[in-house]
Length: 283
Image (cartoon, rainbow, N blue to C red):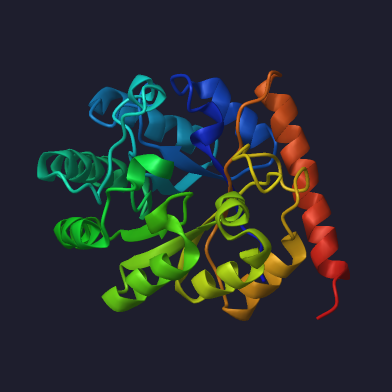
């Protein structure tokens, strides 16, 4: 399979996006960026910043094929345990999430970001009151905007009741719509599926149009560089290849207490190691 890597701006999510962030990514060999539509990192309502971002991407020959839709209004809200959820039972809360997602879809369209990664619910226990019925209503509202912006809405498996592999795959399959797909998040799969991670990935793979690559110990959502945890990478790529996956492979890493350039250099080395594993694995 073609290994087309991208870097998620999740790495820089705790601070406003700067040109240095993009430059570090380009210097590490990344040619694609998954944008992050949440403040303080980036305010999609700021037209001037959107134009500057577009110019910076062009200057560095970077593409932005995808973006992460908002699942919090601001980082301070997330830290207080307040989330945006398209599956919220409360109509007003659901409406807020819909409006934020629509705003991001329209804002990033001129930059070429046609794949939107969307959380199906609030994370963890915060999503216990969320429902697939509410999510279906929200997706129905978003589909006309996806058509308008030529976007694909990819629902990500996350650690929540609605984010587990089997029910999420069943939900997307029932929709049976070319603009409603799955984003496979490897670290989340390891946490929610445990010893059934491989079968969980296999359940999601036929519907997959986006990926998030990161690693962990199976308990903590640490967003480690691939190879630093216990995820089985060769079997993951074998599964994607079997289903002819042709999208990007976005590394969604967490900031370490070190210069970004160091983390990105380690990530680049991990990519080379993964490529070597795949080539040496039996067919």
